[in-house]
Image (cartoon, rainbow, N blue to C red; front, side, top):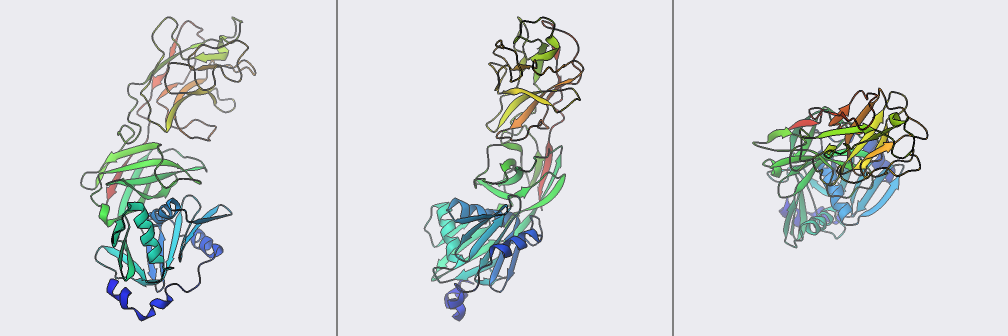
Length: 410
């Protein structure tokens, strides 16, 4: 294909032809160009179409190099010479226009080539050189390789299936998505998805011997090309497969089996002695620390919650350890006095009776826009008893109820 690129009499057309309009790109994405194992690389005369993981990789390369961007009705479109990608934050679709071939080279599913400065292949070579910091005539990153010899030929690697299964993977709402990453000399996206018990993603053939898989939580829009710091599951791959869990060092780094918590019912923000049922504090009077919690990596934080079946669960504040006050001190509903320098909250105005309700400590992603508890809940007391301070009550360790999964390369 490279020799053909250098001698093809039709090369004068590689920078001509109509670009797809914003509306056409939107229609392609809305019409089913979704992440998945089938047809992620499509080739026809003059058009190389990508979806799924290779599309997301190209989108990230363009984003990192300042491609011209427009946003229309929730769709973000990046454009370069004869190259365009569109995403609505979850699915991604890309088009490269020029001279194409469907039998590019061994290990490649398709190729595109051209000679003019405005050719898509030359633009892709520029992106790969920026990514690698190389000016060599042959440059590659996962999914793409470009070779310059007179003209420029770029190939898209053959896709391999990555089968994923998940248990207790919580929903994220509309503003965040899951993104998979295959790890070999760095992390390469395997695509984005919403909560699901099972799916198939794709990886390039060059990453069949990848060492690990990591699942992150990413902003659906306004995201940077690199993986976020909020890693929820990870696992080593041996022979192309492995289990995924929170305790892997590339995820949360713990299974929460050692977590423990106690609390008292008290209202230190008021002088009253008959309203202890309106406050919860994670302290043990004249005793050891009430919260024994594994240290969380960046991207995660603990949060306390109260729920009584009447109205939504209410936060008692966020914290990284049991030492020191939490994010909101005694809370917005507290009385006029100061609370102790420990996590907790008083519910004085309006009053909220905690007896018979639940006390929960969750593990929350950061950032997080949800007003409800995240479903990683290692500590729960399902029935608050009418026992006032200094007597303490304990939360039950429920660490077994946490996300897990498997990954297998086919």
